[in-house]
Image (cartoon, rainbow, N blue to C red; front, side, top):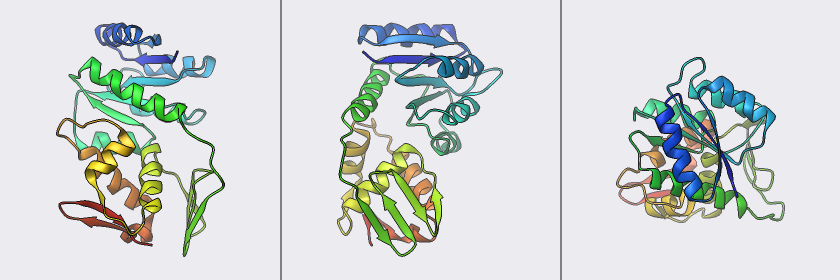
Length: 223
């Protein structure tokens, strides 16, 4: 049974998520602000965090940043705003997913399930390394080095890069990326994929041109 920490300054939202999560068989703990969430994460072990962005004392971005200093626990961010800046900033600090309010509790539970199944099913693999000039990708260690400097990617950026590299030279459709990496439908909004590709290109610097956009199709990694 997974243990979820729900962090939101609105009691109604906390109770709603807790109600659906318990129905799905999850154990739930709550925090009304970011400071309490950080404190609880230091004291207890959770499997995933669902956290609002707009909170008093310590907002969701700052809270996630603090938690990332000592834990790689999956984080789903909640926001009443859907601006690209919020999505990009959330993914940059290591959020695994981003849900815009008002949201469907059932969809949120589905997203939690997808993330937790991916974590649980992660298999031990042989040490695998890809090199292209100054780019070194260590799949096993989940590490990317660009010209001698480690690139710190968000969780989904690692998965995107690994997926594209393992399918190098192949035209990969947007639908395949969304299905195989996120594992759920985007209900007509696939801007999340575009945001992650943009961030990934930024983080791999001069090697960004290796990720080729195929208009109307998807992407191809050339290397």
